[in-house]
Length: 239
Image (cartoon, rainbow, N blue to C red; front, side, top):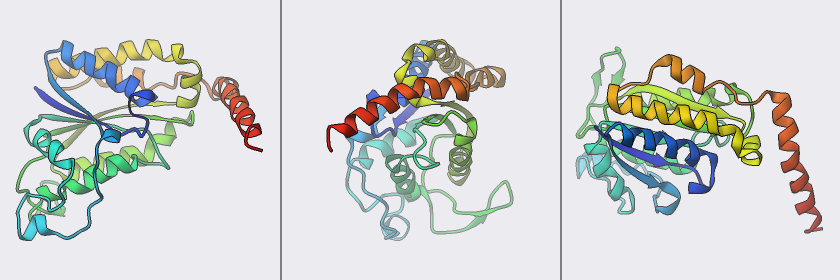
């Protein structure tokens, strides 16, 4: 099994998203998967300019030459795509969205009715067969992930892929202030990665347990007060 994992966090390896993804990748590798990981913050990726050159003049090949050229081969060769992104303004980061938009170059300009009865484009090359989402959000409510999950699943459908699971851990502000709270979940996330590598899927019961909020809203606000105190103090220095 070959896997491509993209970390879309603007903070790269400094954020909670990477802590989640890193342990998931450890589990995948334990299970024998071949994994290629990329930090989008270190890459130069322009937004799609809708020139449609990839559909009409150079089928399957994007006209923009930048670091997407290092990502396309992994999409073409991988069985699973791990989309790791924190929630930014109710959805994926701009870095991740740019990547997904640029993958329109896998589509042909023609139209067909797909297996679900929707009109869609056929493909000049295939994205990974399966998508998996890993995310965190600053707020403590699981509902913070609803728009992102809907978008991620729609992205998978649009590319003819199957969304096979989500790991979504809320309350990252508190988890940054008290990182030890995340450790039990990291162990389960590593187990989930290993399970995916071996079985091709993660048991729904394990995902349900992983996705349970780590702290209550009241505990979250108590811990996050440390961040608020730091924020107030930092503002004093610029007045």
